[in-house]
Image 1: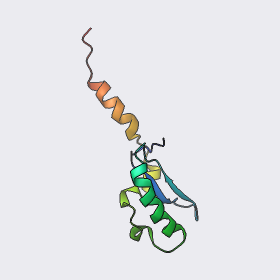
Image 2: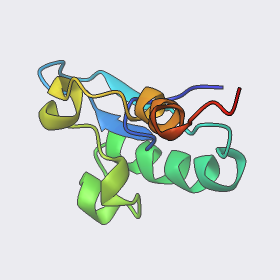
Image 3: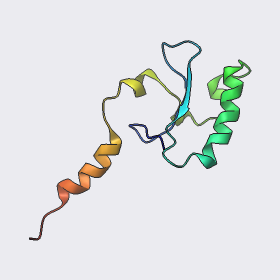
Length: 89
């Protein structure tokens, strides 16, 4: 399984890496999503469509902002409940 730091798939051309694409980080829920993303990405890679017209959710689009975000929401998800936990011993 592949996890992204913001818990969203990463799909599209990698910024500042011409002709390099990514489609991953579906966090174990890829089967229902990956086939439609793959169809859209095929159109993008072949130059038939722009990303925004390919039917891929915009939240999944790889961007410089997502790459430069230093937060790890996966770890935050597990640390927050532990911070609130009070031992009863």
